[in-house]
View 1 (cartoon, rainbow, N blue to C red):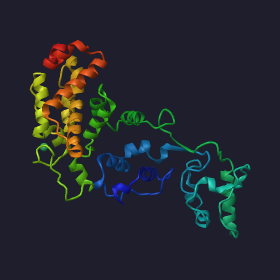
View 2 (view 1 turned 45 degrees about the vertical axis):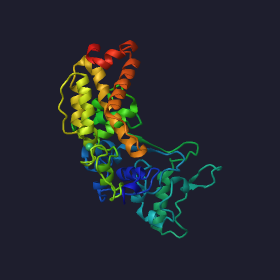
View 3 (view 1 turned 180 degrees about the vertical axis):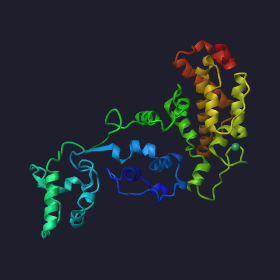
View 4 (view 1 turned 60 degrees about the horizontal axis):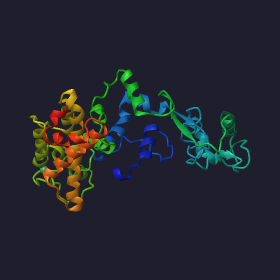
Length: 353
Ligand SMILES: [Zn+2]
C-alpha cells in the first residue's frame, strides 16, 4: 500500500480494530513507515505506545447504535463492546452477509414497519447447535433497537465528555505520569499572528511542509527533478535549509536582527530556532518579537513559492519591508502601537517597547 492510498478511515479502523465509516484493515504494523510523513508515522506508531494506546485504544470507545447504517454487524464492537463474529463464530461462518451494516440485519427489513427482531441471514437448514446459538444471539440483541432518525455514534469513554479532544488526551497522559507536558506547542500557538501562519509554523516544526526534500523522500517529486534550493542552487531544499540556513534566508534574518540591533546565532533546526526566538527577548519586546519569527518563515515560504509557481522573484529588501509592515499592522490591531508610530517602528522598534 502506498501512502497516497492510505486513507484516514483505514488508519482509524486499524487503530481501533473496527470499521466505523471505513474499510477494514486490521493490521498496520506491516506498513512501511519510511514513506510516511512524521504526522502519519506518529499515528501509525500509536499502536506501539502502550500508555497512549491505553487512552485512545479500542477499549476507550463506546458505540451508540442509531440507524445502524455506519456500523458493521459482525465486525464492530457495537453490542456492549462485543464483536459478534468472535462471540458467535459458527453463525458468522454461516451468515450470507458478513461485511454489512447492522441496518441490513433488521427484521422486518421494511423501514416503515416496526422492528421486531433480527435476521442473521443464516439460510434455512440449521443444526441444533446453530439454532440454539441463533436463539442465544437473538435474545442477547433483543434490547438493541434501530432508530432510523438517529445517526450511529462512537464516543470516547476516557475524557470529560463524549467527544475526543487532544487537550483532554494530553491532560490524561500527563496525569498518568507517562509523558512530560509538551513544551513546544506554546512556542507555536501562543502568538498573535494569523492562524494560517501558526499552522505553517507547526507544520515546519513537524517537518511536514512540502519542500523538495520532503516531496522527494515521499516519492512525489519525479526523480529527474532537481531538489536544489531555488535561492542558492547549491544545497538540497530541506525545511531547515530553506527557512533558516540558506544564505539567502540568513540574509533576511540578519536584516531583521540589525533592525533590532541584536546579535543572533542561527541554531541547527527550526524547532531550536523557534524556542530561541520565543524565549530570546525580554518580556516587553517579546510581544512584537514573537510575531516577527513566524511572519518571516511565512514570507520566505511565499517568496519561494512565487519563484516556483509564478516565476516571480521578490527582492530581499522588499520581503523585509513587508514583514515589518505586516507585524506593525498586527500590533496595531492589537493596540500595541498606533499609526503615528510607524516611522519609529521602521527606524528603531526598540523605542516602542
Ligand atoms: Zn539555499
